[in-house]
Image (cartoon, rainbow, N blue to C red; front, side, top):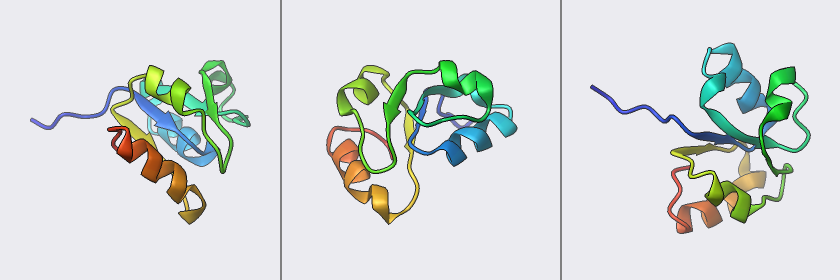
Length: 87
């Protein structure tokens, strides 16, 4: 049986919205500050903007997985990987 991530941080609104549409919104523990959809995601801790992130907040959430998007977030991904996160 596979282990699935239960604590997911999303660095873009699109990944947040996709997880909610897939029925996995309860696994999302952190979202970008500009998240608008779905409305319930706005209640999650805000951890990033598109090209910068609050690494202290992300690490405090102890994510199993961090979802990023685009080469514009490559530096954020590299930093999180160096801190032991799965991105």
